[in-house]
Length: 269
Image 1 (cartoon, rainbow, N blue to C red):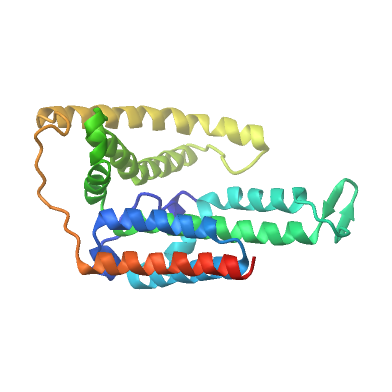
Image 2 (cartoon, rainbow, N blue to C red):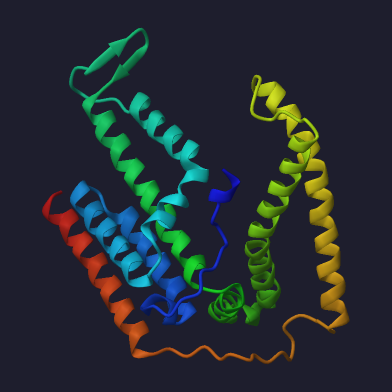
C-alpha cells in the first residue's frame, strides 16, 4: 500500500508538459480545478476528464501510474460516494428501500458525478509534482507570491517549507516501509486482528518514524545553517524562469476548455 503513494514524487522527462514554465503549470492546475467544479453535468465533466487524459498523454506519464495515485485515497473516495448515495434525496419514489435506507435515482446520479469529480481532481493535481522538480516548484511558488512581499509576507520561507514537505513525503514512506519490515522480521503482526489491535500494532512504527523525522529535520537545519542559509534576502537563482509560446498556447487551450464547459452549462441548464 505504501509503495503506491506517489504524492510528491518527480518523474524526469522531456515531454511538452515537462518543458512548460512551472509558474504556468501551477496556474493551469488551478484552472483545471475551476473547470472540474464549474462543470454541472456529465457532458461538462466528460469534457474536463477528456482534457485531463489528453494532458497525461502529452506528459508521457503512464496511465498505470495515474491510477496508482488513487489507491491511497480510495477509502475517502468511496466514503464520499456512499454518503451522497445515502443522503441525497429525490422527489420520486426510492429505487431501493430497506429499513431506514432509501436510495433514490438522484442519489445514484449525484454519487457517480461526485465520484468522477474527486477522482479526476486528484489525478490532475498529482500531475504537477510528477512533471515538476521540487526546486523548480519552489521558484514558481515564490515567483507567483512575490507581490505579497510588499506587505512583509515571508514568501520565500513559505515556498521553501511547502517544497521541503513535498520532498520528504517519499523519504518518510521509504522509512515507514523499512520500519514495518523490521517489525515484521521480529514477529510483529500488523495485518490481523480487529481495528483496536491493528491500531496498537502501529505504535512501534509511529514512534521510530517520528524520531527519524525529527532527526532528519535537525540534520537538514544544521546543513542549511552550515551553508549560511538566511532566507530569501539577497538570494540569486541558478535557473531563471522564462515563459515561452508553449506556455501561452497551453493557457489559451485551457481557457478554451473552460469556456466550452461554461457554454455547456448554459445550453443544458
